[in-house]
Image 1 (cartoon, rainbow, N blue to C red):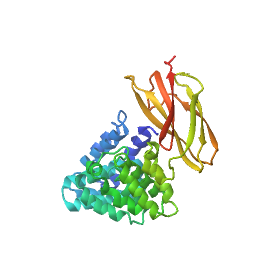
Image 2: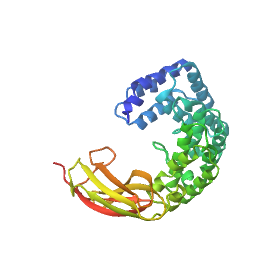
Image 3: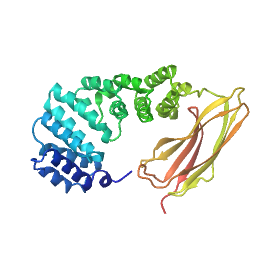
Length: 368
């Protein structure tokens, strides 16, 4: 992940200032110049918000005047793209909502669609969705038929229930069927870029509505194209890891007669920052081929002594009757920014087609 100053830093702020100066030569742009020198201690989102607020302060007036300046900057400056677009689209959304008119709201959506190919408008659109979801979704529905793949992706990505780095839209969380028409229109899109967004959108929905997601995926598989199975598989990935029977069955992972041996640990104690090594064996004891989704679960010790689990993908395979599959896996406990490790008792177990077995405990030793 790049650092904040590599994405929205002095160079980005100066490019934004220069583009606005070209479009609005009489504007003093004092706030933008001041913001350029105030970015260093801020996070990425804080930098975007600072430039958004500076842009709004430097371009007072109604929404229509603001939008004319943004479009003029877009049309006159080839550098008007990249990460400077995030604060610009956020400012467009803020001005459109603050104006309080249908005309400003509708044009704000149009302008976000016009700008999305220059970075993305997926973060900014959340403000408009929160302000008037029904009206916004009417426009978003038309984007699904756009000739521009970036606009079609915006329809799916911008309305995701749990879009990373973005504000939540409570009504989308409370009404999960609200965005189904969008992804139903796009799951067979010609663009992999769009289809991947659709799969991530479906996966987001699975966090709260697993049965609805399985129902939706089943409908897609009943009317597929060459890419539908891959979209569904990616969209159901979290439910498969959680062992949801409907998701597993939809992907062909039916209950199977298997024998699981292990996991067998190479050591009962793991050095802090070291590696857990384990082996296991799966054998098909039934009379039919068995299609298997094989994962493993690590139960991490928390600061309060309890444990929290994390599921990791191992493989998918088909075992013929009597066939066995041998597993050998190394799991690292090196320091990472997304997880803090605590010394003490941990555990690992296998999960095959959603069924867990063979829990084995080990101790993560203290640092040093």
